[in-house]
Length: 127
Image (cartoon, rainbow, N blue to C red; front, side, top):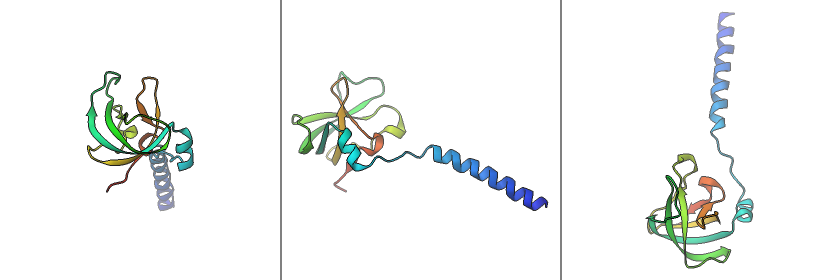
């Protein structure tokens, strides 16, 4: 009887732990929804990973990206992409100078581009 109570208690603790781990699991957005939410979808090459821009706020870091091929939108030749704002879970797996990426982004009020899907809005394509 004592073993049965111990097993039940252990399973209860394990389920609480598993539930708290699930809370940190980010839902992924389908590709068609990313494209629909984006004002700009393109293949680009990072020219400068720590681009200085007066429009950046707080802990934000931006990259200067050359647009190689536009899939949606009508930008200029280069765009500034915010790749981190100081929150690790929302930071993009980007931006290495010279790296080539597929971007799903939208412009914010300051004219800088941000991922429409958090860390899942940019894909490295040259690895």
